[in-house]
Image 1 (cartoon, rainbow, N blue to C red):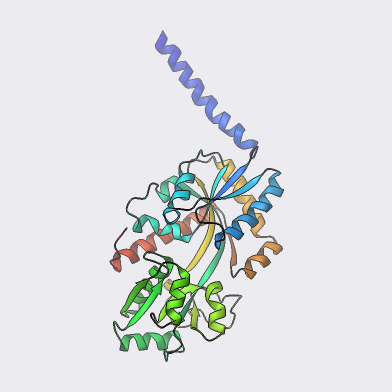
Image 2 (image 1 turned 30 degrees about the vertical axis):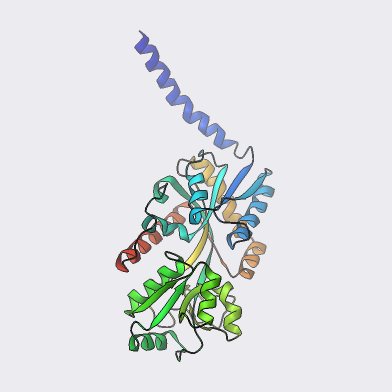
Length: 325
């Protein structure tokens, strides 16, 4: 008899719990939404996160705050969202760096593919291939020829081991067959200083960070890595226009994630709102001034980008024999 009662209760719970979850999703949002940025305040991700948060606040008529939770190269804030209640009230704003973590970090406390759900991509940005002005190469093709004639004699810098600049530099070497030595620095600023001082001869850096130095002649820009030219440097050719294969088109992106078990209705409400915001002309104009290209993608398309990039960097890390840390 007791067994039948327990079974009946379990059946009722199985019916009621999804209904309760659906009811909660129907009224979403009812309270404050927290967007976690896993980096310190003032970084390049902050302005975009805060701009979208302000627009969401007006749209939902609920508080939307941005909380910076740095540490462990972004892992602490990311882990907080991965382990948060999947109710839509804790959202992660991250960059494409998150796709490097599964292959580069040995003891990651979360699984990017299983614990997080891509919500919406909002923008992409190109990298700029820059060299020291003393190098004779004026084009990417000329640089490749020069590097092949001087194997092992050129250094390329980056903001650190496993950084985007490091991996893009390794990919460049793998695709062209040139032999360069990687020199990691503690951040983008020191790596640029090293390039200007000719400690390294090549760097892949963001357009926003390098444009002024390139225009001032302190460094030499050869190409952007995006599929299309940068609105900030429309005269600069793309890597593809410079003869590189389509597979070298590399950009960094910015996007939102939620815990994997977040209900579909909440995912749809959040992603639709974010995409509508990004499509506003005033937001697009503002992003372009930041050196970004607006790129609104929903959950399915964004997931495809995330999984593709995870596989790309897994392959590069393996083929370049980069040791996980």
